[in-house]
Image (cartoon, rainbow, N blue to C red; front, side, top):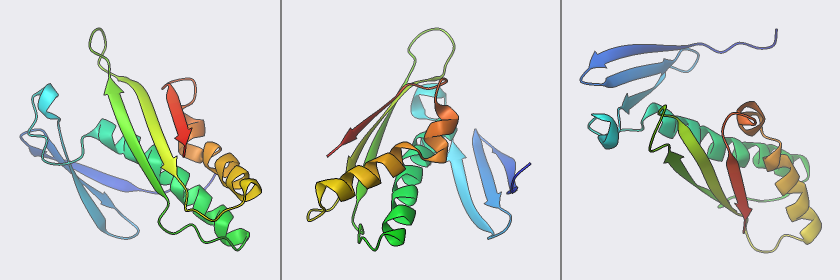
Length: 136
């Protein structure tokens, strides 16, 4: 078994949870979304899945960029989460638009795209959640 990370999560009431990343003490809140009886005042758990995909793509590209001496600060990933409208409530699709900074050569863009496409969150969700990545 590989490295382990621990988070503690506590139900606060009114469909809100508090999560703590044990190693850093960083905290975040979740709310149920407006379309599922919640207040929608924070990320929902499925929003965090979508956010995890987008930030993982950017992080893995960052690691690759640093390794190759590329500056990709300002790269962006916009993610849209679509939920099912009937049957079991689940994420129907995640669509991500990734924008890399100008001035990169095609070979550098291809390197970063391959890195992003291979990020651990995407690999973990494959086969369970349809994902579409648009590289801009």
